[in-house]
Length: 66
View (cartoon, rainbow, N blue to C red):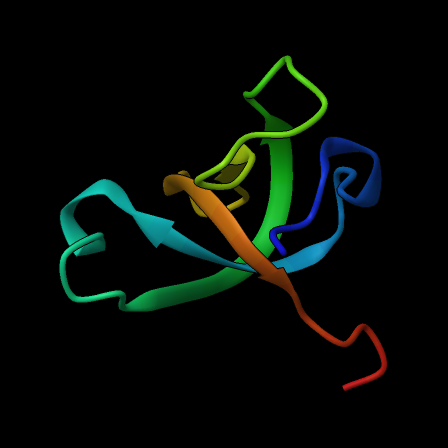
């Protein structure tokens, strides 16, 4: 199951799938800057903007201890 909005906050390290990578499933890792989805959950993942400016849907939350 995809993470919900309450699981994600600015500063969280996540893996996202960007629009152009949806067919391949290629994940991009980064740190959340903004949460763009207003609803508490979304079937394709919560849309976020990373600190690098990349936008995509969260597929998983990365281990913060790594």
